[in-house]
Amino acid sequence: MVSDSRGSPASLDQARPDSDELLADVLRGLSEPPYALSPKYLYDQRGSELFDRICDLEAYYPTRTELSILEESGGEIASAVGGEALVVELGSGSSNKTRALLDRLPQPAAYVPVDISREHLEAAAARIDGIYPELEVLPVAADYTRPFPLPRPTCPAERTLLYFPGSTLGNFDLPDAEDFLARQAEQAGSGGGMVLGLDLQKDVDVLLRAYDDPEGITAAFNRNLLQRLRKELGADLDIEAFAHRARFNEELGCVEMHLESLTDQEVRIGGHAIPFQTGQTIRTERSYKYTLDGFRTLAERAGFRVAQVWTDPAAYFSVQYLEVV
Ligand code: AVJ
Image 1 (cartoon, rainbow, N blue to C red):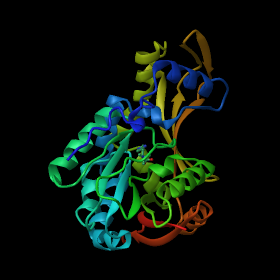
Image 2 (image 1 turned 90 degrees about the vertical axis):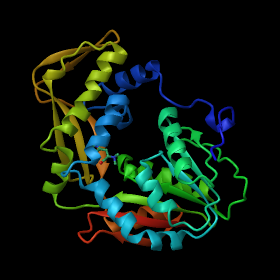
Image 3 (image 1 turned 180 degrees about the vertical axis):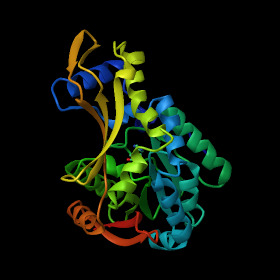
Image 4 (image 1 turned 120 degrees about the vertical axis):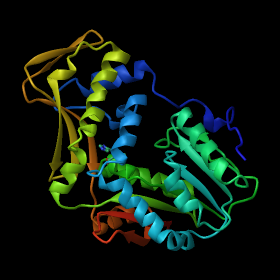
């Protein structure tokens, strides 16, 4: 059963940045070098489609590895979580990942998909409702990086379980990751927890191949951001004059995506001229790769205890159960 939360406080449109906000953010990010834009802007409709294709690529190991862990260890994960949980999924992901958890959880109280995009949200809610007709589904349209009120399920929940697969946490810089987790620990409350999918450090060649695949889908995904600037902000820029680059930032322990200018040029956006020298880049994403120890320390500072960790045999990826302390 899907309850429409439209009109409830949680659904008030914090959703979808308008073009004023995009313009302000872009001008801020390009005001002085090093230029950087938020990875959230990679996901317009075309970007989301390209991201789905990335998830199916041989070179992009995270998605299938996470799914294999969820499938392999789903029973153990479900026992760690326990019964009658209010399952709150941060970013309504693919129904595959949702099912891997919901299929095994004893008597979940309700399922709450949270997403900034109403389209994604409604699709996710409808999919899950079709698979589990008995389960109460309470979609919330919100930016989950900001506080949002949780809906109250009809059957009272024993605990709040936040579900955050996909290593999306990897997009947060370390202090932001800690703040975010601290807020989520508060949101889940005592007795609550989080099932988190988190990518791990590994051979740099494997990492770079995942972010610069031979098929060029990741390149198209990155360069689509330029197309978006043209379409939504009327930017005057030549997409062909930028190339996709993936780099490993040793100091921070993250993969970075960049758009590298292939010539000396000036890009015009909203009445501003932004100069580029050959080789100068716009950083469009950081994707942090954790060690298990490094993450445990961060989680503890945020008020969680890492109760259990599951990995694939090569330890490329981890699924972790965090308990609120
Ligand atoms: C969705 C943030 C987990 O960092 O691997 C995929 C996004 N960027 N290929 C990641 C992404 C380039 C992805 N996350």
